[in-house]
Length: 194
View (cartoon, rainbow, N blue to C red):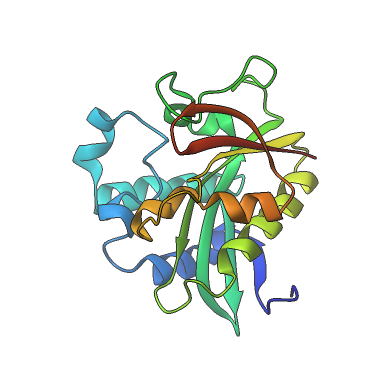
């Protein structure tokens, strides 16, 4: 348990029920079930809902863990998708704020991405995002990652919680990430070398 009172664990198959409880029956982001960056929209859109849930459950069962869950008093309260960039090919698209730089190619399994957060309503603004990121850094180090990148929302404008699924810049900066590029306005590419 960290100083905020949250425990962060990798999403292993035995924790799948916790993710389902956290996401609810429809799943987050209109039924995406964290497939948004895993496949092109034309393939993803027909799967929204149950198809996407089944696809992601199969991914979790196959392993390795595609991210981390945050708990408080045994209750799942947050999720962060984190793992090799190669596992989320749409995040590496050349038209995105998250486009990889030449010194950190997407196909290098040591280059990881922290791509999607989800925090349970009622727990937002209570440190869950920071705890998830801290836990993700520990998980990435143990898994052999050499760096983690994120394409966060900068803190210039107020943004809705819905738009912050990529995470706020301030949380990454507090965790030691540094801006390495700005390929789109308002979306710095941040990096932590492990």
